[in-house]
Length: 150
Image 1: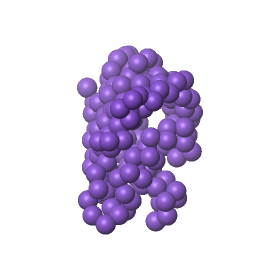
Image 2 (image 1 turned 30 degrees about the horizontal axis):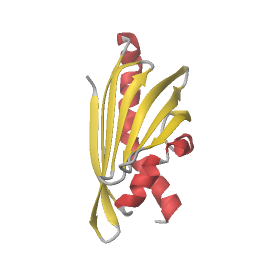
Image 3 (image 1 turned 120 degrees about the vertical axis):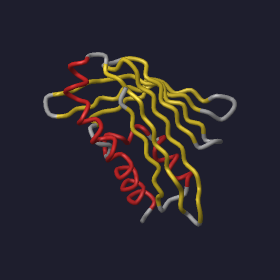
């Protein structure tokens, strides 16, 4: 199963980066391959967590697919967990972590593990997805610079 992980220091606080990644409705503006994102539902839990169910449409040239995920925002631990529900994947899990390291800087951790339902789709899209995931941290850092200054 393909997977990708990165840990990247950014010039922004962990809380700011958490809020930026948690603001999924903004993804079509700056996330590679993300053409559309619609939140179907949002539930605030008593312990401070928020659970979203969202549809994300990814597009590249002739390829266009929509998949549904459950997104759990955990502000206390500054963690975001994404669990795949429906679409072209057989499996997808994604985790973001945010940790302050020093004066106004933080480390953003990104991990994703996925497998396409169809071997043909995996062959076609695998390299492109891998390339897109490698651009994710830069896309979020650039967005943070625009939103928070940098």
